Amino acid sequence: MTDSGEGHAAPPDPATDEEAGEIRAADLGRWLREFARLVRANRDLLTALDSAIGDADHGLNLDRGMTAVVIELDAAPRISSPATLLRTAGMTLVRTVGGASGPLYGTLLMRMAAACSAPTLSAEELAIGLRAGLDGVTARGRARPGEKTLLDALEPACAALDSALAEGTSLGVALHAARAAADAGRDATTAMVARKGRASYLGERSVGHQDPGATSMALLVTAAATSLGEPADSATAGAPGSD
Amino acid sequence: MVALVVVSHSRALARAALGLAEQMLTTRRPPIELAAGLDEQTYGTDATAIAAAITVADAASEGDGVVVLTDLGSAVLSADLALELLDDGLRERVVLSPGPLVEGLVMAAVTAATGADLTRVAAVAADALMPKQAALGRRTPSAGQDDLS
Image (cartoon, rainbow over all chains, first blue to last red; front, side, top):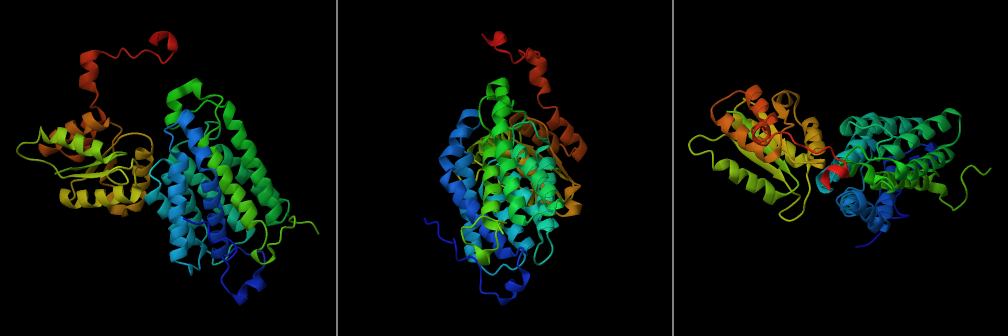
């Protein structure tokens, strides 16, 4: 088992220089690979959080799913459309995760795919896609923010991304704002009473525990900030937007 | 004949529930498909497996429709997602039952075996806790610790 795949994701494609700032399928692949790496690194934490208020499998399930996604990406390195890549990843999660995060993360990525039909995505199109994913997850779980679910990280992240882009900031700055919002939303779940999923069986006893789904969702947003926040070609360690 | 699909986190649980229902199905039996567990040992549900099971069940039902029984948690979410993976025409003949897995399956199977239509089978599955509730009353202590101590 290796964490290979970082740093080599961009295929040689002379067209990309002319489209700096555009998000290609390969960039989304780097995002999902980074998410897989973060899930692996936080697997025990996610499972420990889930053991407190759920069925103690969130880290294991999501790690199994994202490992399968990376295998799919490795097997099909030439996926050239964002929609195909997102749909492939979403279907893989649906097949392999097993727990609630399978249909929820699967729905997120598949609805993003449906909303991202262009061959490359602008920052605004990415935000629209993520918003479509949020709407899909909301409908799937019949949930809303404040119920101690992954929506408590995803919804503020979408809101922060939308508002930052509306102010004309770069994608990198906007994604870092989204990351901060997701992290704050994740932290806020600790004080919430669970209203959805198995944690809701605990009622008031769920208070005081950080939600595992919101925790993994914050990792997905963190992965976006670190992998999509800067153009792949200038992936030096410098701060975004520091000109 | 209306067909049934059993969705559970556990393959063993789905098989056992089916076995319980089969005790009641001596002469005629409806088509019943299982979509349970990620494999023999691993708990989990898979929307693509559920969609495939529904498709097989639908073919066996010859258009009479499919009632899907689920256990808990992600079984419901995965079954809901599975509906999106089906053809539009098929989706209209599928009902996700809010009924309990074991009682719902047994009562739906017995009812489907009589040749009842989709609406009837779905209604029976949804109300499958009623006999037990009638027998025991609904003395559910309101979830507070006071009632349980």
